[in-house]
Length: 521
Image (cartoon, rainbow, N blue to C red; front, side, top):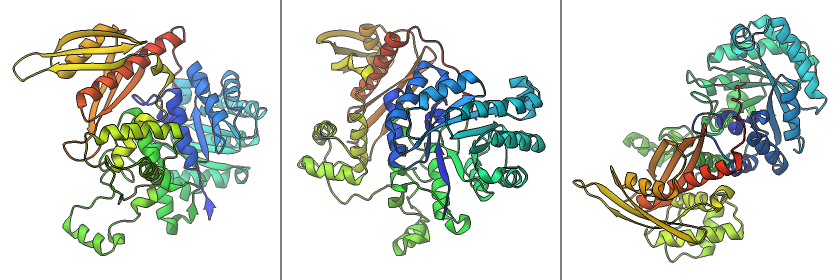
């Protein structure tokens, strides 16, 4: 079957959405998941945006060898130079050049005439071509562009050396029928169209991103730009898991395939959600908790008779496994390691040791350990000992006094560099009191709380509590996560990690210029 390439922009378009920022180690962790999934192209970032973005694109380019690595660049020599410096160490580097082509964008954002935009598009594609052969050109806001002018721009980009042409629905405006017609029109009426791959990049403002992307594929596009869990500006982007499983499940309609290892979808989804401190909506297609759940009696009867009655794909096909192995306090390292391998985790000896130690601690508090518990333990104990936490404060102990008729009081003892500090504070509740005591010890810079989120990992009153705290300072978000059967302990550890990261940023980036806001292509 003819293959559709999957271009993942979680680390660029997804990461730039509010509340979804990641540090370098987190980006590498996501990139490794994408590589294991066999994504064709990873857009690692917008290299010109800031020194931090440049560093992450460069590091991912030098680390990931199984995928094409791309960096976004506006149609300026400086952007393109910077993008090349960032991706030149990749096994297969790509420069992704874009310029807006809709009348609205050209007049009010670019303040350029159509002829000037046409000229700039050709010049900058040719400029990027001197660095590498793999050049993608995006006509930003293509779905609101004048058809005749869009054809001229695309033809100029192809003539100048572009090998991939992306026609984005930048603001989620179009409909499936229109998207298919757009791809068919360009392919049939532009000179040189047979020599390039056409791509679609759809946004979900009207809830049609996946439908529009699939329509583009049916119209002849052979690359889809998407993000894990549909992350992205505003309402998000085409969801990687949705478009991949749509193509796979309906091959009778598309006659196409992808190179994606779909059994890695669940792990990639969970990794991204864990990093950004969110959980999947219960009814999220493919990866939501209820995606394969059946409560209706009629549905249950049908599934028991034949799963195909109400399941068009299996949980196993996306990496969700049914656990028949009961793990508990008497389980050994080998059993834990084997189950983690079955769940798709390949850990080093050091990582497995850390996870097993945490597993034993949790076993003292819980009778049985679920797969969800194991996944949470792994995400909290592998690839998360960040450099920006190494010099920070750690919880020594805390004591809480609270009731429904007195003011909450918390005493906290923190340790840093072998020195212990204690303080006590009042609060509107136990968490407020604990955070006030921590602030009294650390005296952090002014910050606001973006998110304080507690969710249970599994079922039962002895479930692990997973707490995410996001604080905002310096126009950046700093995320901390804590895991414990004691939600107060988890809450304290999450806040400490967020403050430690903020302090590390202050030490390292105090003189760094504010990042450039990446325009979505």
